[in-house]
Length: 92
Image 1 (spheres, helix red, strand yellow):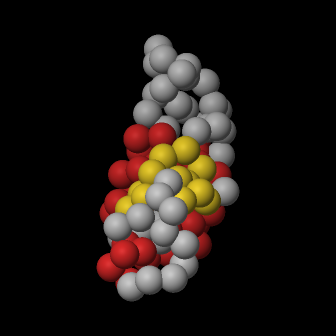
Image 2 (cartoon, one colour):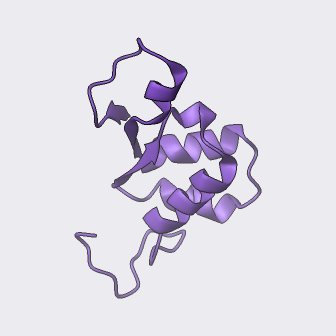
Image 3 (tube, rainbow, N blue to C red):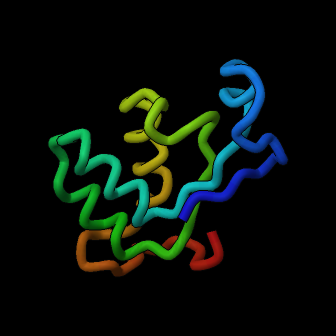
């Protein structure tokens, strides 16, 4: 699920849309990485077990793949593909 953090709507200039923070849930991020055929299957599998979200700058489809991979790694920090945590704060 995508949520805009700032009321920017879809109108306005392209630059204004890029400066909008968009909240992206882990499962949506996993879907986008699969769509882009990013090689690390373990990361996308681990994302599907995480019930968290992160913010990216601008639209999901316009964000660089490298930024999405970094976002995925930050969401899966301490999570194995089986979904268990390794000594991490569960509220993180």
